[in-house]
Length: 126
Image 1 (cartoon, rainbow, N blue to C red):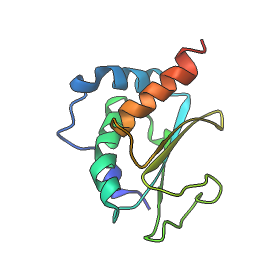
Image 2: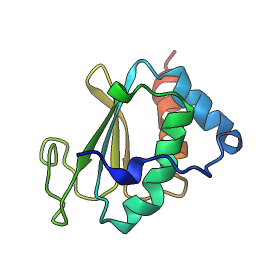
Image 3: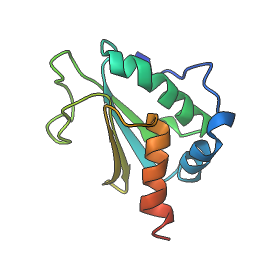
Image 4: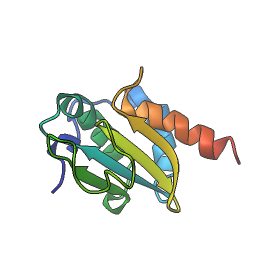
């Protein structure tokens, strides 16, 4: 079941987050975003719509976004395999290898945080 909270926030401004969108877009065909959350979760409801908007603005293909709905006990697909404890959690993979992870909260929004991690993992390694 798709996460409704991952539906893009219609008032999110891609122009205000140009560096973030550019980074996500630059790697749009090579990365997979795995998102764990729950539509019942207040952190997910406040953070995931903006992340969804960033993915949309970066034109990330739908087949590169996987979402996993967890119940209120935070149980669901991939929880044990990916050691999911808090939500929202977003794992970014390249060729099946984790290169970045956002867990519940950071000082910056999900997309901004992950873009920084992606740049550090991929752009700096080039």
